[in-house]
Image (cartoon, rainbow, N blue to C red; front, side, top):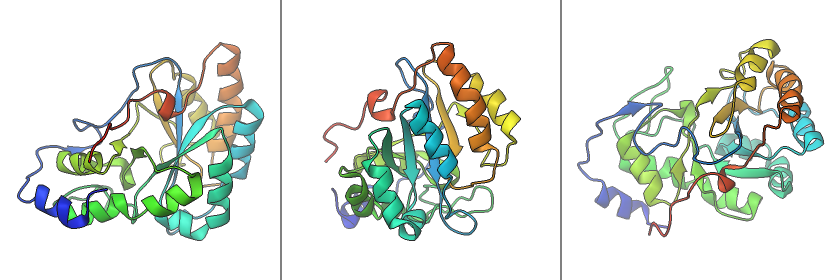
Length: 239
């Protein structure tokens, strides 16, 4: 992996031209068949818990998925992180270190300041990698920033570190604020190529209940589910 100084030198003076959820280089969909379910584990205040009902549901239905894990959540749940990493139905991805938008100018989203420069962007992407690799047995291929907002320079930094930035085409639970019925409405419309975002760190929200209603019906209709590793091209030899 390039060093912090490598990234600082390489991206010195780069000025971002785009900021938001839909930025060039960010995967919003995938090119193949099946629905990619992704779940964020954000950590921090009110976000360090885990929805065991959701995990049990995915196991019972044998549905593969990708979990984006933030350093704060991993630090609070090291044993559980390794258990998730050992589950063949779960792919572990990178949700950043401090759960910030991935930027080089500190631009904020939802009141959360982004990383302030290329060095801080490096830290946000690179710092979780050793612990995530230890938990999963392999380095993460995918990155999603805190708030899912980023700028185009941040995306390029993540790619230089061997990780594709992945957002979503369907917002399954709106940050775990949707009711179960709202989750059903959103998730049920997913089809081939869609990437669904939801959250696994808010037990008691409508997420697990909505998934429990939506997913069996989707399976009955013949909908298939895939992990991102089976659906997206990763960065090839980025160093």
